[in-house]
Length: 278
Image (cartoon, rainbow, N blue to C red; front, side, top):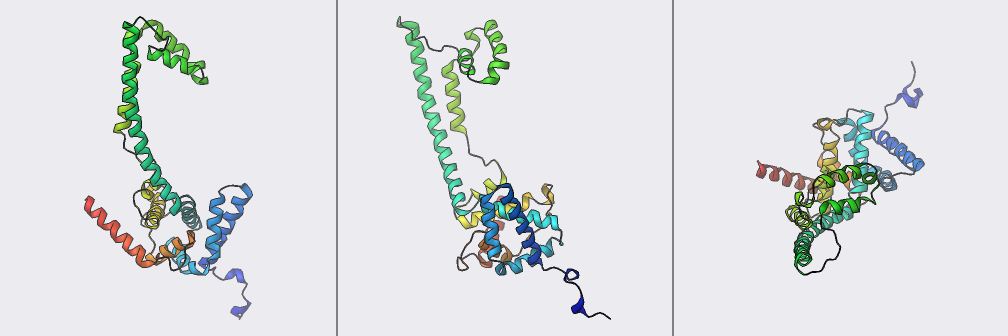
């Protein structure tokens, strides 16, 4: 009878931490070799440097993903992408960008209204003053002129527009002033909308760490079976595991108030918010 000590190491089950870190190391090597995503390499280095802190989280991840390597890889990639793209500083910038977009649209609306009035006044002067300034008077002429510097327009659409111009004169088309006013009205009525679920999740709140946690959970959901991904549709991590992952991925100090209680309070607020919407 062989002693257990004589069994080869390969016969022993690998620790979840070793499995996860092997995936991280392989991902790091690939990113460096391909010279891509240096920001994700930094996050990988943080996770590897805080290996012991993440041991329990890795145990839970591997168990809940049923030791499925593909699912584990997808999960870790989601963590890397979220931390590299949506750290607290970048979340703050995203909220600033949204506020600026609102201001820009309001400014466009105001300037468009002013420009529309000026264009109308110029047309009056052209028609009644005895002077003309040889400026564009037709929206089609304007498009034709601008289109000359646009390769696809010049090669393909320009000829068709020229034909239309010859068939229908200026009276059949809206005035340039009205087009400008329509641009302004469109801008004034616009409401900034996030173009993807992670941007939506990260730009809603004011607290950078809470916003990041929202992004992280949204990243898991986007990679779940419910959206054609590899994570189980009902996949979830404990408050403690999420806190450990977040602390390591963002390189926070252990006393940075991101602990299981922080995650628990966040989840409670999210549940209460969902109830209010029902």
